[in-house]
Length: 533
Image 1: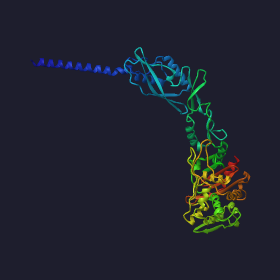
Image 2 (image 1 turned 90 degrees about the vertical axis):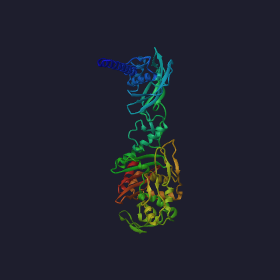
Image 3 (image 1 turned 180 degrees about the horizontal axis):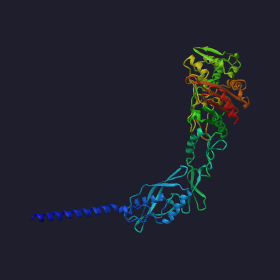
């Protein structure tokens, strides 16, 4: 065979191979593109017989999310589009996002099947309504399509029914003791430090209270049939708190008017919380409920209680009140060094003689102050639904010097504003007090206590009244029959001090704590503002 003939045969063979490969590639490309040609996006109105139920359901849901089913694989596109348009309008333009769920494997000759999907409607206020839906698919002229029904929009919707939306804030989610809104309704700005706790508990107790809207299915006349999302507009009473909007607003106004960190806690002497207020300078942590501070002379309520029981004195016993005195290795001084000489214990209490109470504390057993503090609730432990609380921490003294410091509310003695109000409530009622935030939810008592004897508390009350008539809080004489005790407590390096007033009037006990005020007089002034409100 000649070289030229060989070259011709080889070239012909090569061309044949190329033709075969090209034909195979073309065939593969056609096969790969076949599903995409019928897979459809917006604008494609038909499916072909090769589309699976999953492909058809997926295409339908994509168009459902867009809000236009005129080109969707559905047996009645006009009715489907009309219903979906009406639904989006009824839901105030809420957007929807769906995702395909399970699609059962279907035999080749099956006339029908179904698919699940997940829907999430997002409303203007940020609420998201999620539910699982279902699509029924049938063969129509050999092709799979979605069978239209109102249940496609929501599985509970029936023929003739539709969805309706309303603001959930039409009624309060949490109400105060008088039925006024604390969460929801017109509660804007009420009890800011407690909003998170109130909402959290309410969302667990009342179905759907995290929603800003209510979605219902209604009949052809518009009458609600069932609430599908949120709180029923005509249902349900709100969760009721022990708080008082009037008391809370009075407390908040008082602390907001103070230049430094300020806290007020008020409760019924029965334990029902009325107000928990702290200003912006006090920070966003609920220190009113669990922040521990040295109480200063406000703790003399406990020191007096201990001395009356264990120290062999009464409110009328004569005691020395020198301006300065060394007790052990500690030198105590009265404010500005005042010296009263010998006076009754009641007078020394009203004037807040550090020297008197340091000496009395030093004469008590090592656990004397801790026992009295426990009798006043300062070592009790409670679980209030929604709140983390701590009343205080007063332990037996490890040395005489430590006990002298504790007697005037310094050293290791720690009390929260809540605990201080609890102490005042215990003196007022003569009984152990359990703090509460809710009318129908109970506080768990992890560690309870027993109040001091009535004969002791009668004397403590007289001493606390003297403080507000002739003593360090006599500025409250115009605020009614107030019983209380002032306090100034150094902290840190000792260069600054917190100011306190702890007391009660009638059936309301309260504590005012001003961080870094360096004097108790501003705390007395805030107490007067609160009581006036």
